[in-house]
Image (tube, rainbow, N blue to C red; front, side):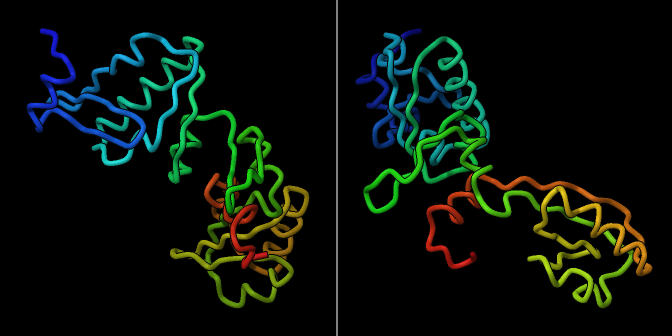
Length: 193
């Protein structure tokens, strides 16, 4: 059964409007692409495309965006949700005070940030750990886990030092910086540098 946008608007339970993007939703939360997408434009501009959606709607929207991109459509997404940008985009343009401060791939955007990798180490104890890691920025987490901001070149030296001083290391996990953290370090108020 086909409905026009006007017919669906008359039934408020089936319609969701967002700022620049209009998606029509049936009760199950499956998006029906609006006419603008059906006409296959070369450029699609989406403003906060997952804002206000439930989990199923977010997944459906992500899948739709990825499918359209794979079909060759250029998609510009405006969003404050940088986790979504990580999931959907291959490039990022960051704007601060009305000026473009970066225009790069997501990978380069993150790579260009100081301390872009950290490691989480699960130890037998965090007792007096500060005296062995004072050279590095670190966070004490729960369950005897410490997050250390350290380069790949230095992590093995730190592990060796900890073992030599009686610490047992149960796991070491590399944690790459998120786009949100990169944005705050690169574009934010620089309070943490």
